[in-house]
Image 1 (cartoon, rainbow, N blue to C red):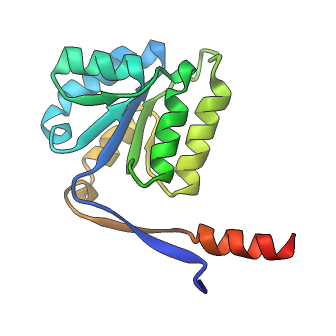
Image 2: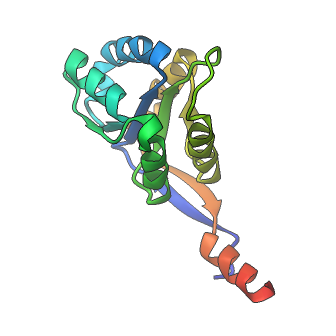
Length: 156
């Protein structure tokens, strides 16, 4: 337990979380339709309403969790911690207040902690999905949390 970081591998088949605020759901569905051939090669999940709408309108299989305001953002955050979400496509609405904004911030924070790529608009999603990394494994380093916890427990 001497290393400060551990190497994690994002596999060739990605686990992609798809999320959109209400005013951005149509944009995300359109984006999914345009990128259907790429997306169907990966495992897709999303918050409840968004996942259902993507599946209904594109035919892509998307595993749905709860709606964002009912804990779906937190469920996806937990999947990141478990190593079961490799990156997040989250079409957020910066111009409308969201009642579950603390949940959204927690999801974005945990994605940053675990060095998970996040796209929050069409342009960044395009860059991510058309990256050469989509067709290969990708190694990245995250904090060695076991070492961090051990050291903290010894100093408290």
